Amino acid sequence: MTDFKALMVEKKQDHTVNKQIRTLSLDDLPDGEVLVNVHYSSVNYKDGMAVLDNSPVVGEYPMVPGIDLSGVVEESNDARFTKGDYVIVTSYELGTSHFGGFAEYARVPADWVVPLPENLGLKEAMIYGTAGFTAALSVIRLEEEGVMPEKGTVLVTGATGGVGSMAVAMLDQLGYTVAASTGKQAEHDYLKRIGADQVLPREELQPEKIRPIDKRRWAGVVDPVGGETLAYALSTLEYGGTAAVSGLTGGTKVPTTVYPFIIRGANLVGIDSVYCPMERRKQVWDRLSKDLNVTDMLETIASEVTLDELPDTLEQILQAKVRGRKIVRL
Image (cartoon, rainbow, N blue to C red):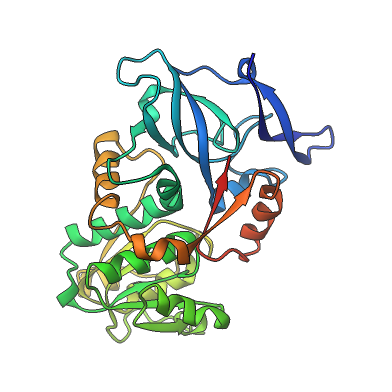
């Protein structure tokens, strides 16, 4: 019987949670058609939320968090996959109601599994992970709404985070002019290194009073922040501009009006990386292996942690102390 290490989150009698590295066996894993020997996972804001007391994302305990994983198929009861296949699994219920990627082995439903694209490695795939997938899907949605490089500047909010950093690098590679917003003065040089043409202080996007319609500034917006930042971004879109929203770190309430939509023809598109249909999911990963593959920037954007270092990293991401991407080497 194979024993392996995993980060386990358990709820105690006082309803607080305890997270620790534990030794599990394959018999401890949930049902699924595909057993994966996990090589890498990654750390997302949602993973940090999974280890909170009264977590809003974990459906049941005990739980192995980790909404991303890449690895090699060890066993498969599904004809689509065979032993030795290189695969990716991200989102769905992974790490929230089904044991996830913060473990050396994972057993998952075959319908969640994506074959690793030919031009990507397992480590590279996890540098992208859900954050990179979300950034790529945001960029693709801007393209589909007609936001092309010649239309004007694209704003990226929360730009030092995982989604933001990836979006900055991808947009720059595609030839867009990129404005990156951050609340971290010390990270301006980092953002310029990965492709930002200008860096804006977060306060510039959070004026005391948000006008229904303000000066036109952006052809498009990639927004993993939400809240008042999104409201200001909508009020400053160019005519026919599009904002792609994927996050809520700035809050769930958006104090906007109908004016950006009925006066400037603005578009607000939602980005769902959790239940994104498999056909679309494969298309996005294909783009990540080709023109959205920001190979030269990956080492700047990402750093690696071990399973033992992971609990501290999860605390840091909740405190907005993580820059870019953290990947977990299993």
